[in-house]
View 1 (tube, one colour):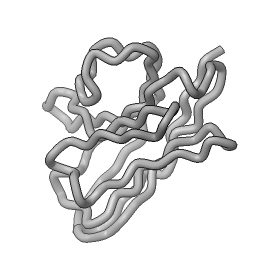
View 2 (cartoon, helix red, strand yellow; view 1 turned 90 degrees about the horizontal axis):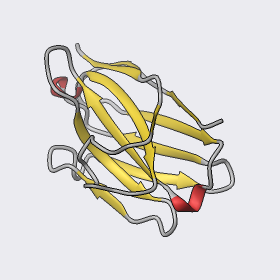
View 3 (cartoon, rainbow, N blue to C red; view 1 turned 135 degrees about the vertical axis):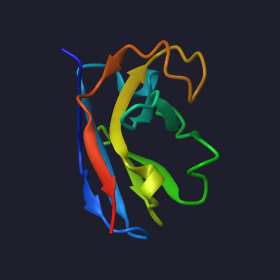
View 4 (tube, rainbow, N blue to C red; view 1 turned 30 degrees about the horizontal axis):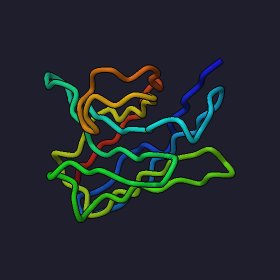
Length: 124
């Protein structure tokens, strides 16, 4: 049974940092991409960052480049999204997702599995 479990969300002041985790189980790690997406109230879901587990190649949305870093711990089957210099517009529910066949690294269609989401709130 495939499971994706996010953790690490919370409330932080502008300029602060958070690290989100996505623990994966139930599928062959190397064959999958893991992506992070977010959705703010009233907005559509948007792509944040994706990693190709086989070789660690990463993709970032322009609005997080230079601030967010995606990494993976192969042994723990966990992907980490390090978020620095957070802004109020980063406030959203963050989801991780997994797929074997990518339509687009930051496009939210075609992902086979989704986590339950974790809330990130950036506010003073």
